Amino acid sequence: MASMTMSAACAQPLAARKFQGSRVSGKSVVRAAKRNVTVKAERDGPVLIGLAADSGCGKSTFMRRMTSLFGGKATPPEGGNPDSNTLISDSTTVLCLDDYHLNDRNGRKESGLTALNLKEQNFDLMYEQTKALMEGKAVDKPIYNHVTGVFDPAEKIESPSILILEGLHPFADERVRDMFDFKIYLDISDDVKFAWKIQRDMAERGHSLESIKASIEARKPDFDEFVDPQKQYADIVIQVLPTQLIPDDNEGKILRVRMIMKEGVENFDAPYLFDEGSTISWIPCGRKLTCSYPGIKFFYGPDTFFGEEVSVLEMDGQFDKLEELIYVESHLSNTSTKFYGEITQQMLKYQNGPGSNNGTGLFQTLCGLKVRELYERISEKEVVTAA
Ligand SMILES: Nc1ncnc2c1ncn2[C@@H]1O[C@H](COP(=O)(O)OP(=O)(O)OP(=O)(O)O)[C@@H](O)[C@H]1O
Ligand SMILES: O=C(CO)[C@H](O)[C@H](O)COP(=O)(O)O
Image (tube, rainbow, N blue to C red; front, top):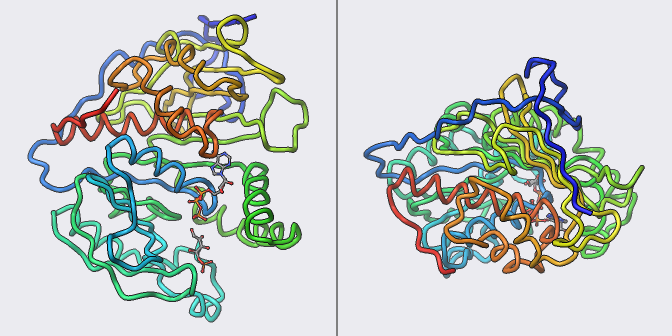
C-alpha cells in the first residue's frame, strides 16, 4: 500500500542537522519561494556546464542522457581521431579533461604521481582554452589517447552553444571554477564503485578480482585528496549509495540515490516532491506502482551540505515497470519538462542504458532537464523538443 509521511515541526536549526544518510524530520522550511532567475545579458559565448566524477562512474552514460535533450546525436569529431575523447552534437560539445593531463602514461611513471594528483593536470592550458571557447574562439586542444597512453596531435574545437567539461578536476582551479554556469558532481560511494568496476572490468575486460581491488585501493588516497573535495563547489551532487531497503546489502544492485541541490543558484529552481520545503517520506508501491522486493522509497527535504542550505530528493529501490514512472513524475514539481510525461519518455528512450530503472537514471534525466532550462534562460533561445 502506498504510504507517505510529511513532517511539519522542526526542533533543530537547519545547520544543526546531521547531513549524511539521516532521515531528516523537520518543519516545512519556507525559503524557496523566490525563483532564481538571473539572465546574464549579452552572452556571446557558450553556456558552461561542469561534471566532476571519478573514472568509471557513469559520466559517459550521464552525458548521453543530457546531450540527447538538446537534440542530435553526440559523436566524436567527424573525420577526426577515432580515439578522440570529445563528443559533439548540434549544440553541445563535451570535452574530457583527461586531455589536459600534464604528462602521458610514461611521464607519470617517472613522476610517480597518479592522474588524480593536481600536479598532473595542466590547469593553465585548461583555463586558457576554456576562456577562449567562452569568448567564441576555436582552440587546438590536445588529445590524451587512453589506448596508447600518449598524446596524439591536437584537434580543433569550435566554440559551441553549450560547452560541457567532464572529468576528474573541473572545479579544482579557481579560474575555471568561476566560469561555470552550473556545476554537477557525481558521487559514487566506494561500495557501489567497486560493484560497477567488477561488473565492467571483470565481465567486459577480463581483469581479475584481485587486480580490480588493488587498482581501487591504489587510487583511493589521491581520489580522497584531490577529487572528492570538489563536491563542496557543486550546485548539484548526485550521490549513489547502497540501498537501505535490504539490511547489510553488499550486492550493489539496488541503489539509494540522492540529489543534493544547493539553494539560491542562479537560473536553477530545485525540483521537489509534493510540497516545496516540506520533509516527505513516500512509499508509492501499491495500486499505481508495481514493486517487487524490496520496493521503492522516496524522500524529499531540506538539509545542509558543507555548511550551505540544500534540498534533497532521494530514491531508494528500482522500478519494475518503467512506464509506471509517470505516476511518480506527476508528483514531482519544478522539473523543467516541456510536456506531461517528458521524464518518463526520456527514461524509456534510454531504458537499456545503465541505471534506467533506478534513481541514477531518474536524477540524471532531471538534472539534464534543469540544464536545458538554464541554457534557455541564459541564452534566451528555445530548445525545440518533440513530444
Ligand atoms: N547508473 C548506473 N547503474 C549501474 N551501472 C552503471 C551506471 N552508470 C555506469 N555504470 C557502470 O559503470 C560503467 C562505466 O560507465 P561509463 O562508461 O558511463 O563511465 P565513465 O565515467 O564515462 O567511465 P570512464 O571515465 O572510465 O570512461 C558502465 O559500464 C556500467 O557498468
Ligand atoms: O582517471 C582516469 C580518467 O578519468 C585515468 O586513470 C587517467 O586519465 C589516466 O588514463 P590511463 O590510465 O588510460 O593512462
